[in-house]
Image (cartoon, rainbow, N blue to C red; front, side):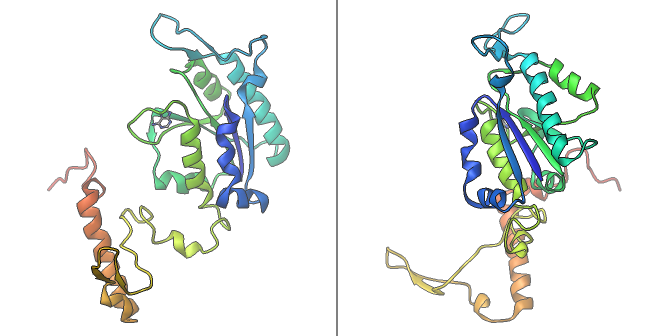
Length: 249
Ligand code: ADE
C-alpha cells in the first residue's frame, strides 16, 4: 500500500516511523511519504491561508497550493503504482462521515491513500469540487464529534487503524478477529497469569475459573456472552437498530 500525507506540519507525522507502522515501512509493506504543503506555495512568505470571503472568524486554506500539491503527489505516485491508478483522497474533517472499523477494513484494501490535513477553519470548497471534477475519489472522515486543531492527529489514528489490517503487518492475524468492533461488539475481558493475584490493597483477585478449564467450546461461549453484556452496558448504541431502521410488522 502507498500512503501520501500532505500537511503544513510534517514533523507532526513522525510517530509513523515508530512501532508497527515503522516496521511495516521498513519491511516494504507500506510506502509512506509525508509532504510539506508549503513547498507548493509561490510567494516569499509561503502563504497557505487567507481570510474567509464574506467575512467571519479565522482563516481558510487557499486553493492554489492544494491543487498544485494533489497534481504533484498524484504524478509522483502514479510513476510508482501505475499510470491509471488513482488514490482515494481522504480529508480528515469533523464534518465528515464517522470513521469506524468497517472504514478501516475497506481502506486497508486500497492500493493508494492520500491524506490531506486541513488546518485553520478549513479548506476552500473549490478544492473538493476540482478533485471530483477530475475524477478523483474523495472521502471526508471524522474521528468523532469534537474539533481538533487540524487533520494530523486524525491521520495518525486512521493510518494506524488501516495499516494494522494490511496483510502481514500484524504478525498474528488471528488477533485481529476477536478484537473490539471487528464483529460489531466490544471485546470480552482478558486475563493472564497469575490466575490468582493479590492486588496492592491485599485483595485476592482470581481469574474466572472457566478460563482454566481447557474446554474451548465453553470458553468461546463465555467470551461471547461477556462481549454482549459489555456492549449492552457500555455501548448500547452498537446493539440498537440505527435511526430509520424501525421494524415494520
Ligand atoms: N479535524 C478537526 N477535527 C477533526 C475530527 N474530529 N475528526 C477528523 N478530523 C478533524
